[in-house]
Amino acid sequence: VRILLHAAVSIIFFGVYMSFFKEVADRLGGESVGSYTVINYGGEAVYMEGVKRIISIAPENMRFACGSIKLTLSGEDLKVSELGGGCVTVTGRVRSVSEEE
Image (cartoon, rainbow, N blue to C red; front, side, top):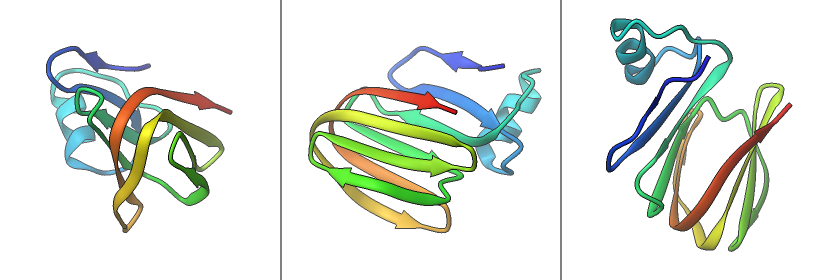
């Protein structure tokens, strides 16, 4: 189940991954499955928790493994601006974030 809040920031919760965002989902009555969280800051940046491995990095396409789920970010001038502890921040012009199992 996904909880998607539309505002200046889109938040997608996937996870039993313990984080501030999971706690918010729990308090709002959301049910979580999976193991990651993605926050899209209006297409200017994406913050991810639960990243286990970087699959590929390029200015127009980045792929990350979050357990059995693969996340793909597409856009322009994409850069990893922060990385550590299973958290990744990507900046640039983010057009889409997709997942595949």
